[in-house]
View 1 (cartoon, rainbow, N blue to C red):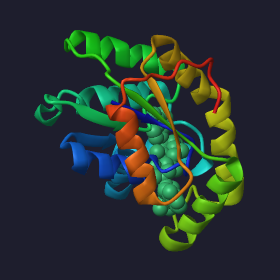
View 2 (spheres, rainbow, N blue to C red; view 1 turned 120 degrees about the vertical axis):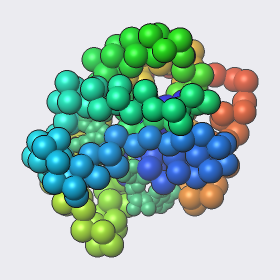
View 3 (cartoon, rainbow, N blue to C red; view 1 turned 45 degrees about the vertical axis):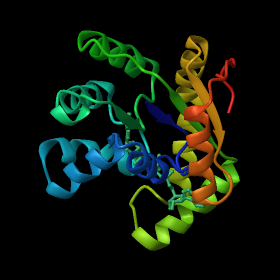
View 4 (spheres, rainbow, N blue to C red; view 1 turned 180 degrees about the horizontal axis):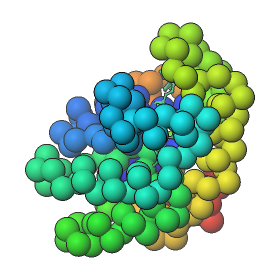
Length: 195
Ligand code: B4P
């Protein structure tokens, strides 16, 4: 499964909760990058420049990192990728990696929320965690990138008929229940992009 949504829509929050409920491993590219930054690895030093500016880390770096993570044993029974793919080039790369491993995506979950709500949430997180990419100018840039690049990713999965769109407004528990309902529901959303 994949979890796609704009920054602040609850991807990381919900991926952890779904991972517990479903017993599949959640893999967040943002978390992996932050662990590298914290550890001062060469990848972390490179990624930090992009993350602090709210830019995507280049596909070449991100793709290789995901490929190597998907080779580990704990993904054999399934996985939930959170925050990847964010570009259409990443979609193509993931298709190749999965095809090579004889795997395919079952469901792509799209979490939606209004931009004003997203900015409000991320500014709230900034006060708690001091994340270097959670200031208003960078948040707005991350939102622009989502609309410019990641909505095309959403459209690709909608065309394939595996997209399930879930409203990310409301309490955290309520959103988890809505996501579980979307995973279990046989109905699939087919839209031409959109938020
Ligand atoms: P991420 O770590 O994915 O950061 P994010 O988009 O802000 O989402 P996150 O999962 O952390 O936040 P959430 O919405 O759960 O990426 C960070 C950076 O890494 C990117 O900008 C980029 O530079 C790089 N990167 C990652 N993946 C990449 C890729 N594939 N390609 C290139 N670069 C990549 O939660 C936000 C806040 O909202 C939290 O405080 C939470 O508590 C709150 N919240 C959640 N649900 C709520 C609810 N229902 N109500 C109220 N508040 C809620």
